Structure formats: structure tokens, C-alpha cells
Length: 465
Ligand SMILES: [Fe+2]
Ligand SMILES: [Fe+2]
Image 1 (cartoon, helix red, strand yellow):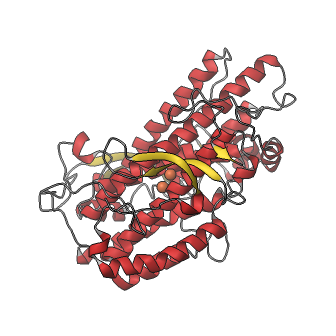
Image 2: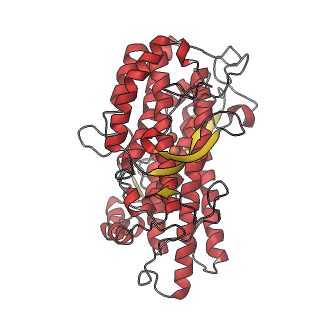
Image 3: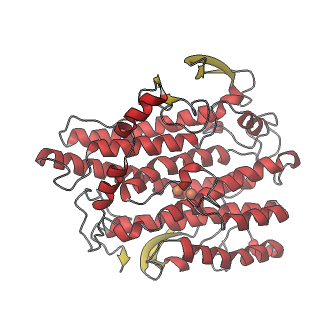
């Protein structure tokens, strides 16, 4: 572990001078980007952060006060497996690729660039949130997510620099040039151009959109291209905390709302009504579903055949790894109606991965509904049907209600304010967002967490302001 190199790493960077020089050239550009687009107004504050110092299952994270620009963004890969093999597809059982297979160079670069682009994008989306934090605990969690997304960018840039030569370096530069929501140079995926300017958005984003990241990274952690697999495996250990922030964040909002519902009118009491929480769920869940790509996809078939992108827990969950002769039944729109269609399984793998994701999201909903039940209110939160409000794939271009029934565009337009956050909803939520920065204090619209971070109490000074 070369933790005290300029770029901390466990990939023996000092032995590859060319790569080290290329990354050291990229480093100041990255720091410029961080200062320009990272958390606004808190760069010089001490934040109690965890830093990856080892990839071992124990003690990989070290907690201490750090100023964010001094955070040690590093390159950490899971240790190599001796005799690693391609775990699925047409090359099943052959030695894992240590270099990029020539015929899939472009596809693989695209996968890495697309994943890499989401990491700085989310930091940009969240850069103003610190100013309205509901507590120091939440402020610290926001910054933890932000620095780790920065590190995930490093992980992808390492692969681009290390394995793709000149065009990889150009792509690494472009990752610092695009900007979330900028019409001239937007981020690649639409969910990462949506504003995330209040904390309800932030919690829904980390619950639903970071969770898409979990499934994409899990599929890539199965990859036969070993450097990618090892990189993604380690990113997943950090990603778990991001989803924890979203999952428990929304659960705490639901708890507070339920408490206020018992006292009177939630709005008058300064809380977030349940129907607004539901609309935010509908919005972020549907945008996050789009991130899995089209239901029927020749790319998904090609990536699987090549051994580049597997299924969720491919090695653990499946005994048959070719997926060559099976069919998958899905619902599509044909002649203005919903119909079932049989699709070769390999062409349906985006939908298979999306299905795993939906199951995981449902567990979150069950946790929030348990909170509501525990607080003694009878209302419940739910996930909309996956066809609702889609912009990518088979259902894009058609309109559906929350149950997934095909409806006319006119009906959708007439009813969309019941289903998706309106301007007024967003303004109302923003009107509640006032910073609470006294240790141990919390905003009125959210319940405190069940526990602090790493054994510290809730009233610990997580950020020194
Ligand atoms: Fe990430
Ligand atoms: Fe994340």
C-alpha cells in the first residue's frame, strides 16, 4: 500500500512511471475542478471523514478530521485473484483479460466513461446542499458521499489512463469539462443533469440513483476484464454508505412526517407531507430506472457474450453462465396496447438487472412503511410501476399511470401534478431548508438518526464550522 505517494494507491504506481506521470498531470486539473464544482463554502472546514487506507475487509477506512481538498483521493483495487477466469458468456472459463480485448475496446471505453461521468456529476448536483443542512451529522454524510464520488472518478480515470492510451487520456480530460445541467456540455446521463437542490432530492437521489450505481458496479465487478472487476469491487464497499444515507434519510423524513401527522396539519407544522415524499420517490425512481438502458438491447447481449458485463451476482447466483438458449418474457407496447413478448435472454439483460434493482428498492419501501406503521399512521409509500415516466427504452414515448396502465398523453398531462413534484412542491420543500449547524440540533422536518457515525454520538462535532 503506497499511501503516502502523491496519489495513494495499491497498484504499484511508482513502478509505472509513464502512468504515474500522466496521473500526476491530471491531479491538479482534478483539484481545480473540485475547488470550482465541489461543495460550495466548506472547502477550508475540518470534516470528520473516513479515508480509504486499505482494501482489506478490516480497517479499510480511517476516520479523522480532514479538509476536503486535502482528502487523499487514491486508486484502490481489490487484490487480484490468482487464476482469475472469465465468469460468463462465450469465453466462459478462459483466463480473465488483463488487457483490453481489441474488438471491445470502444465498447469498454464507453462503459467506463459513462460510469466515470456520473461520479463528478453527482458532486456538481449536490454542491449547494451544505448551506441548508438539517444537522452537522447530515452535513458530514453529504461531504463523505462527495469525496468518495470524487475517488470513484479517480478509479475510472486510472482505468482510462492505464489501459486506453491517448484516447483514454482525452476522455479523462473530458470528464472534468462536462457539467451537470449545462445545456452546452451536459453530463452523459439524464438523471445526472437533474437539479438536486434540496435535501429531499438528495436523500431520494442517494437512495435510488446511487443504488443504480450499485447494480451497474456489481455487473461490472463480474467482468472478465480484471482491472475493471477489481476496481468496481472496491467502489461497492464505499457505495454502501451512500445508499445508507438515502435510505435512512428518507426513513427519517417519513418518521418526522408521521409524527407531525398525529399532531395536526403537516404543512402548518413545517413538515413535508407524505404526498410530496411520494412524488419525489416517483421522480427519482423513474429517472433511475432509465439508467439501466433499453429493455431490449443488443449492447447488453454483446457485453455479456464478450464477458465484459455480467448479471448481478453472476458467479454466486447462477449455475448456467452462457445465458445463450433461454428466453425472457417481457411486456412491451405494440399496436397501442401492452403485449407480452419473448426475447432472447441475452438481449434482456438490462431488464434482468433492472428487476434486481427494483427488488432492492422495494426493501427500502418496506423499511419506510414499517416506520410509518411504528408511528401509528395508516398511510403507506410505494414504488410506481416501472413503466411510469420513462425516457429510455420500450416505454419511452408512451404514457402510463402509476399502476403502469397505458394512458393517453392528454390524461398524463392532466394528472401529472398528482404524480410528480410540481414547481410549488419544490418551492415548498426549499422553503423548509434552513441550515441547522449546532451540534446535537436537527431541523424540524426530519427525525434524528438512530445512531451517530462510527460510534460517535449524534451531537458530535462532525464538521468544525
Ligand atoms: Fe460512485
Ligand atoms: Fe455513490
